Amino acid sequence: MRSLITALNDRWTADWRGPHSHTTLLPTTGHDTRSLRLELAARAAALEAALAEHPTLHAARIVVVPPDLGHGPRLLINSVADGELGTHTRRLATLLWPHLVDLLASAPASPDELAHDLRRHRSPDATLFLASPGLSLTQIRQEARLHQVLREWVAQERARGTLAALSLEEARQAARHHVLTLNDPSCARAPTPPGAGAWRKRADLLLTYLFFPILGVLAKDVWLAARQTTPGLRRGLATLLTALWALYALPFTALAMLALRIAEHLEPDPIPTPASEAKLHHLEVFEEGRTKNELTIWFPVKPTWYGRLLMRVILFGSERGTRHLWTRGTLAGAQNIHFARLLTLDGGRRMVFMSDYQGSFDAYINHFIGVGGHTRAVIPISSRVEGCPKTRWLYWPRDTVSFRQRWRAMVRSYQLQASVRFVAYPELSANDILRHHALRRDLFADHLTPEALAAWAHQI
Image (tube, rainbow, N blue to C red; front, side, top):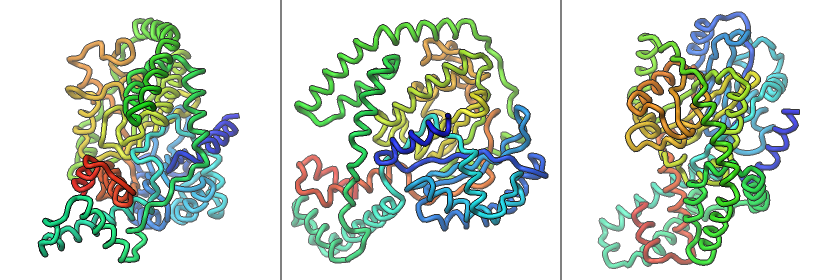
């Protein structure tokens, strides 16, 4: 049944939401956790080189999951790629099979058998955040190249003294003429976004917010999204509909929040075993000096039926937020994240959080739970995790003084380091990608307002 729901969801979102994330948890054989990590460390360079041959792969990681809930050590394999998932898993299996075949309990005899295992053991995302939805790997690379071409052209024209005599619009036209003469695919107009899935996206938005009114907890984000629509009649209509929806959702949301508050009051407040000094040192050394990092956390969910139910409801809400509200490069206000994935595993008793982010671990944490942090992105989800400091009304810490320190220690305690990690564009931040895309779009626009022209020039 779960496989059928996953397949239907894949088809429903295939035309309007990409790239796609694929996560598999594969049993291993013949190794304990430490020896398995050592084996992967020895093969990491070869695995990363193999993954670099995948033509549509944005990011990938392989993580050793220690024994848990009666399972031996397992390999968590996550990938983010463009295109149809079946094609992607076949490509991925072909690249991984020579390097992993002797570690897997199923001992796949061929890449096709490994592809079957990747599909059979797949765990679907409960929540997927994309900083640049709809942009393929090819587009990202082309637009980075176009940005470089334009910077070089501006430097040349400034040296010749020709730019000073041009208005911004004349400079834009001259820049467009220059890049088109290069006959470089990177400097051509952006491909027209496919419109086949537009009706599905609108239907998903309508059905979600009509039939799940407890999503009134996202009213602030819905309101902000309405205010970002095109000024005029469209914005006025969006604002009116949002206000009407908020009134409809209010009683349902109030009842849900009351039930949640009772659960918050009754639940115990255990403190997880802190990470050892050796583990902390290893993680800090691994993260130090890297401009782009990954985070993988293996969380135990609070061991009650209502704890698991609340987790599923909260993840359902956060997925609808990432589908329709947080689609402009920010995750509930945080701007340094490329991809974020949340999955429930082992019958809902475990949750995995994976993120690819820019900057240091401390800066990442401060985005969410530091002074002025974007707590509505992380506290509701982590409140269902065993060992999370207590919360009030889902969004707020009960003890604001100790919450950050305890939350950070909890994350480090449950954190797993990826043994293998691949990133297709390590030099680009999420903001770089969005800026390059806007630069290309506006370069070929038929008309820009004076404000948009100034913003376009600033992008270069």
